[in-house]
Length: 133
Image (tube, rainbow, N blue to C red; front, top):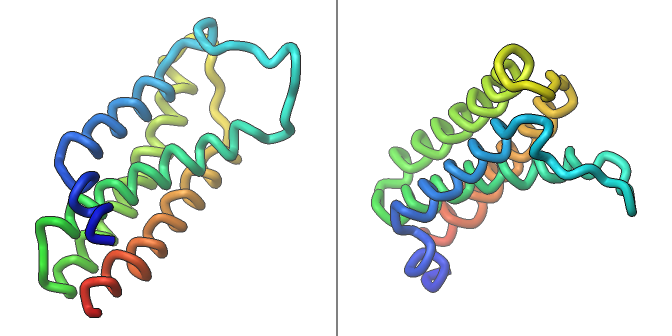
């Protein structure tokens, strides 16, 4: 746990991940490669879970490296969970109305929320509880 916090709790890691999520969500449809050779059913949902789970977990990891008070840390974890959901929902609406060749998909929103929720739970179990030991 200490190694994870030492190497991955700096501010630039979640900032870079947030940028990667934004770039991938806001690419025009023509720039996304098509799956012609192989197709994994619902693979894009796994990508959404990973992107938004990573978003929440990396921001929580950053907060865990800064804040030592468990009650404040818990509130910050929840804040990043909510922001992850807002980011996911907002990105779908931006895709629907402003990104050419991209569609709104309610299942993507659900996958984003599942990823954010899993990361929130893992953060609570792993990052918050680890400091108590």
